[in-house]
Amino acid sequence: MLRYFSLFAGLVFCVFAIPPITAQAPAPDKAGKIVVDQPGLNVRSRLDWTTGSLEVSVTRALDPSQAVIPRAKGDAETDIESRLGEFMIDALSPVIVDSAHTYGNFLARDPAIFAKVSALVTGARRQAASLSEDFSQVTVAYSMPLFGPQGLASPFYPSQNEPIPRRLGWVPTRPFTGVLIYAKGMLPAVGTNSTAQAKPAVYPRLFDENMSVVMEKGMCAPDALAAWGMVGYSTSLDDPVVLQRAGPLPLRLVARGVFGDNSTDIVISTEGALQLLTLQENIELLREGKVVVIYESLD
Image (cartoon, rainbow, N blue to C red; front, side, top):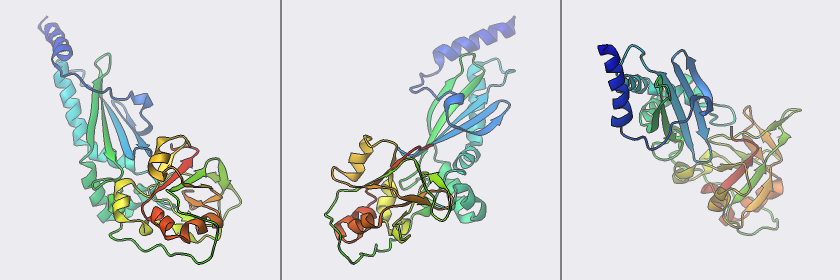
C-alpha cells in the first residue's frame, strides 16, 4: 500500500512540481538520422544547414524500479549528460566537411582536431526536455552552432586568407551584391561518366569549366568564415537568405557540374567566373562569403 502511495505521490509531484518546459523536445521518430538505437536509448541528429546548427535529441528510458518519477527523470538526464560528448561526436562524424572528408575522417586521423572538437561539444546547449505521455522515457534536445568562435567548424578556420587572384581579360560585368548559384537536379560529375546531386558541405569549393579554382576556404576572410561560413544554403530561390546574403542584385549562375568524392564542389561557367574575378568589387563578394547555393536537398 505504501509503495502505491509513493508512486501516486511521485506522479502528482511530477505534474505539479516540475517547472514548465518552454519548448517540446522532438519526438524520437521525427528528430533526424539515427545515431544510436539501443534498448532504452535512442539518439538522433539533424544538421540544419540553413541556420548552421547541429541538433541532437536523446531519448532515455526511465528506471522502472524508481517509483518517484522526478527522481527517475533526473537520473536519466544525468546519464544523458555524462555521455553527451560521445553522442555529439557520433552525430557530427558523418557531416561532410569538404569534397573528400567528413568530420569522422578528421577525427579518426588527427588527434589535435579530435581534442578541439571534443572540447567544443561540451558546450552543447540544452534546448528542451519532455517526458513521454506514459512517463516511461525522457527526451532531451541539444544544439551546437556550426559557425562562430565556438562553432564546430572553428578547428578548420584559417588564420589568414590568401588573396584571390584577379584574372585578366574582359567580359560584360558590373559590381554585384552577391552570388546566387542554382545547383538543383542531377549534374555532371566531373571526371566520371555519371551524374550526381550537389551536396552541402562546410567548405565547398567553386571551380570554372577549366577546373581552375574560383573560391576555396583559404581565400575567404577568416572573420567572414567564423560569422557565417563560405556559403549560404537553401532549397528555394524565395528563401529570405538569398536577399540577406546575396543582396538584391546578385550574379545569378546555374551550376554546370559537381566535383569531388562527396559531390560538394560546384562548377560554374567560365564566363561567370570571369564576371567575378575581373572586377575587384566582385572578388570581395567571394572573400566575404556573399554566396548562396540552391540545393535539391539539404538532408
